[in-house]
Image (cartoon, rainbow, N blue to C red):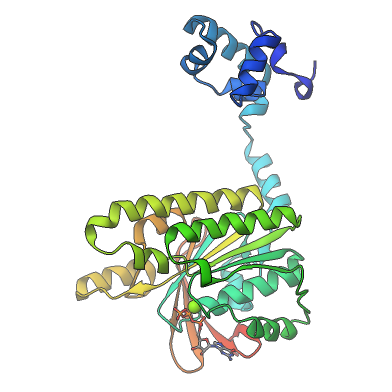
Length: 328
Ligand code: GTP
Ligand code: MG
């Protein structure tokens, strides 16, 4: 019998009645039984732990290879090659640092002060996703007035792209987002629309990720609650990244560090002297953290502050009418 066709009734000790009972509880496949704790199964079926263990073992015997995939190094590389896409940033220098662009199936957090270019870089990733990956975009705006369609049209024109106003973007505007909870609902709303419209989304932006958290959780005693809620958001977004092969782009504001020692430490760790709001939890969940700073009227600096596969490097870029570009 092939693994594909196996059903609950094919497991030793499970008849049609028992199978129905399990399905009712949501355990509708041998794969789900294989990863259960015997105690849990015993409890549901009102059978002994020994009998439950026999059923779980039989399920493992029959479907474990499918229930818990394991790969060789070669297979992992092959899989990544087939799946991971790279989204150009607009700056060749920055792309080079990212080995050809920011990869999908990851979370990119962009940190920096106001006017450091966070939103502009997020825009450019959206435009390049539409242009080069031919995949759609979701934008969650958590502070009003920061999603500017005219600017996106301008950037699109610069790469010869005409935005399809009906099908390229799902936008949740800031008007309904006034707490971290409504921000979470915005993700769910956007994903529901994506599924309904059967859209293939490559980039999912939350601009800003941290603003609502900062406003809602004031005071040190609320930090544990804030961390818990942040983890819930990031867990959801992380799951989207792998389920739909998306790049999640989050922007985060920074705050001053009062003492010079702290500033120096921050500079060593992240390239710049200001600390990201939402600090530890956000750092933990981000695949990449890029720290931005405005250097002059024409130039900006990006530092790869944290990455699993890239060294900490700096590069300069420009924000031009066409979008993010290299310093000529
Ligand atoms: P906050 O959201 O306030 O924290 O800032 P941010 O980091 O998102 O800054 P943003 O990405 O909005 O970058 C702002 C800078 O980009 C501005 O100071 C401008 O110099 C530049 N910029 C913004 N819009 C345009 C534009 O339409 N054309 C050009 N050439 N530059 C722009
Ligand atoms: Mg912004």
